[in-house]
Length: 441
Ligand code: GLC
Image 1 (cartoon, rainbow, N blue to C red):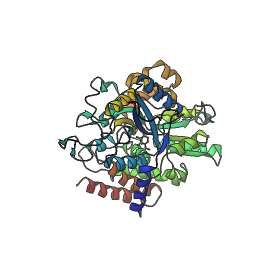
Image 2 (image 1 turned 90 degrees about the horizontal axis):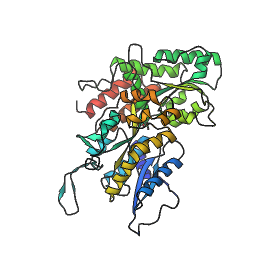
Image 3 (image 1 turned 120 degrees about the vertical axis):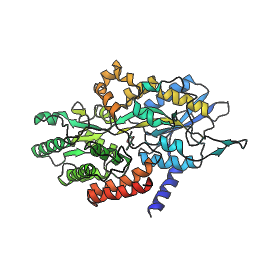
Image 4 (image 1 turned 180 degrees about the vertical axis):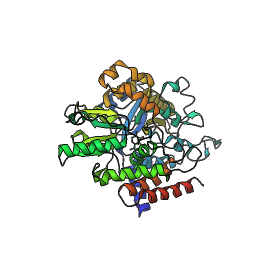
């Protein structure tokens, strides 16, 4: 049944993406104009800014037109779409946005292929090797985590577009009201949430909300607890450490958050946007989310405008704070028929001016380190200055071409634990065995 559902989802995704057509941009390619297709998820904020950016690109490159097509927001569904299409060597999109966890898999995918004249073409993978086009770019001026993820065997296959790291949001007004400081440990967070909930005595107020649905976001969240307790999925020696006591304790704590009603059961079905909507309507004291949510909460009409603080993820007593590295990259489909034009678009969208524009208008955070000193960005989003060290220190999920398979195992077991179907020990042991099998241990 599960296989059938996955297959049907893949079929649907293979043909059913929505198209965000930009007015007047879809004339056929009869005058030598190159029509590029750019696929990406719905980027936070008003889509008019992405359109404005693409209009600027077209003005600078009058021979190229861009049609952008949006995919569902969930990274898992997008991944399914890309593997279905790229496996079939589909040339029908040129530039696409990649989650930071995909480049190793996509650069490594497939085998030796044949070029038109029948000669063996040694290049593997689904992404165009960008080495010849990006020799003028100094990647050391960007945040290192995504740059590393985008390089495969020392060569760039994608370029960081914006960077994410898990952050803790808190209600400044409510903490001040009860003389509580922003928590630095998970234990402090739980006790502060309990105090506010008791004193406020408001049944529609939740203590702490986070992304607990069975999907990639859950892995991002859980890792912050495991790392924050000194644990890991795979340790420095290559041993699968996911069932060690540090991880068991971390997951037991997460389950207790729900049992003790600090987190409502709805977190087990929540993703980023669901938690953001609840938080923006003033119905939670704490939230874990990516940085994009902050600008949206400061927008006109938000009922928590001016009341929200943002800080680093807590850790367990004796542990260290660890934020999961997230973010999106741009790459060129190796089967595209317009590779040079596609590279131009990637260059344009990832250059400083474009990343600054996106940061100002959507709240997504740039990959260029010096933009964190930018006076205009600092004035608009004061916490940007403190964000750079957090993004620089954010921890990547295991960087391997097999990450997605590993994540599917973790998603199922983490979900079974937080919903109380399996004990932390049992779920993590089951995850350990499957990951060992995957890695041939
Ligand atoms: C955000 C992050 C991405 C992560 C996803 C999980 O989009 O940027 O890296 O995989 O959330 O939901």
